[in-house]
Length: 71
Image (cartoon, rainbow, N blue to C red; front, side, top):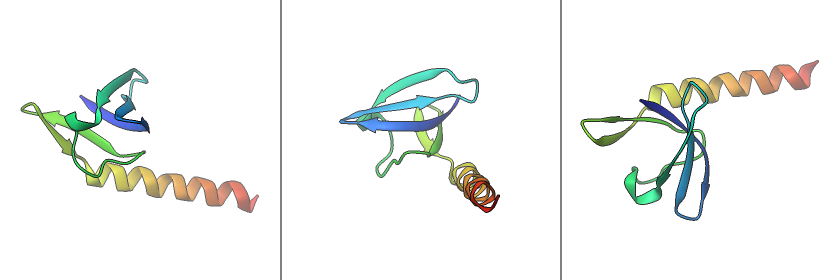
């Protein structure tokens, strides 16, 4: 299952799936350097950062923000 980091509070990472289901993890269960907006999934019980998905979502958000302020 794929997750998107919504926020990090102390040592708890609050995530959401693409189906909008909330899930929390402890920070030490995930990879080092995790940030809000990161996309990741578990493969063979290992947390894997999805850089292409993360970058695509961030780029999409940048474009949406630019369009919002240009109008």
